[in-house]
Length: 309
Image (cartoon, rainbow, N blue to C red; front, side, top):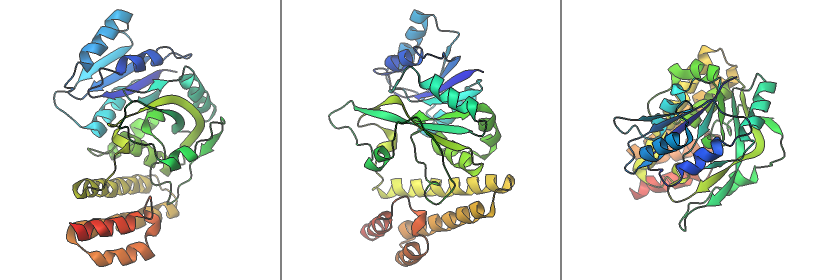
């Protein structure tokens, strides 16, 4: 059993050493750490190279500096597919892993071959005065009781429900789904949705890491800007379609197909509401497609955005 860590970095010189130290203090050692640096403007690459040299870890850590900026999503997927281990842990540049994170998650995955992707919980810690807040709904779902929960395919769980930095994915599954990825599809949503399709998505109710919360957390930014919202919806629609294609190819149950088709239709209506000012799309969205929103209040918010612009 070989264990890989996939890390995407960008301007992480101040935190990355602390993260690497936590990885190499694991009770179950990792075999490799693949770091893809997305053209950092600071000394991230140099800091990593010094850490490798100082700790004689050239056989454990590989850093790849991109020739041009790929963006957060594509850079993480690149790191994932550079990994060679049987299991791949996703890793942010600024978190701190608890010492038994790898061992405990490996114990769970080795005990259940049906698990293709395993998410876990985290302990947030504030690192800046103007730090973004972790959603309350997410923290309320944490149990930290060591239980393992299968995530069922339904209208709620189509939307990603845990942080990518907490996830581990089987290499065999990562390779299986590789043809379905598209440029810009976030690594965590990619493996979340496709593992959901094969009933292989599980959550381990264990706080496996300390997550640094600051003003630059990508996953915590709001989407009240029209251009940002439209980009999100366009990618959401593409992700639904890719998941549908995968589900059809594996002969998934009919209810999964129907639910994905419904979400594709809803996303198209939402895009036309915002882009083409189709205000009356709000009526079918509220009546027939309200379960195709992660949060119900988004229906009125998007109507307001369409009118305001």
